[in-house]
Length: 200
Image 1 (tube, rainbow, N blue to C red):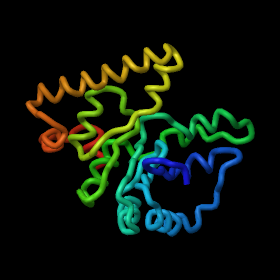
Image 2 (cartoon, helix red, strand yellow; image 1 turned 60 degrees about the horizontal axis):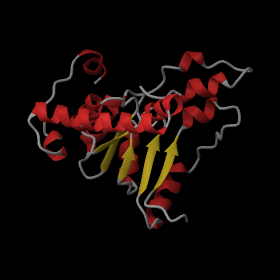
Image 3 (cartoon, helix red, strand yellow; image 1 turned 90 degrees about the vertical axis):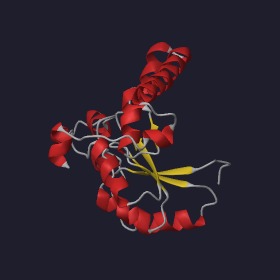
């Protein structure tokens, strides 16, 4: 194995189904995950790729010993759309909206247990998004697409400034909420309304 701090296993059935050369054999995946988790010398992160991890899937993962889950909900990079744009033989535009919204994934997965590390990702772009994800139940957040946009369009310094801005925004929101650290941020009371309430 590479000299890494952790390994991340991606769950991406929707992407694989749409992808022309995708792997469509999903048999034995849970058993494979269990085997890797039991035999890995480093933490194993199970990560979705933009369609979200359901409550049922989260329960199954926790039952086989998974301790780190990146829910990667719907709302960020849309890999179904990306893969569909590469194809000319079939059209999958009708499922561009497939997935569980990030906020719902966080709430549902955290409701099962507090005994695992929940990474909130999928459309995280601002310090407010980071704070909300943590308040809803994430232990930490992850961002990819937005950082890449800054990097591609402005270069390394542009991306670095964006990340510094995110940190500042998050600290500003924590100050306005009267919390000193992430543990206190996790305890902030919240109210669900609108579309999220309708699907919860």
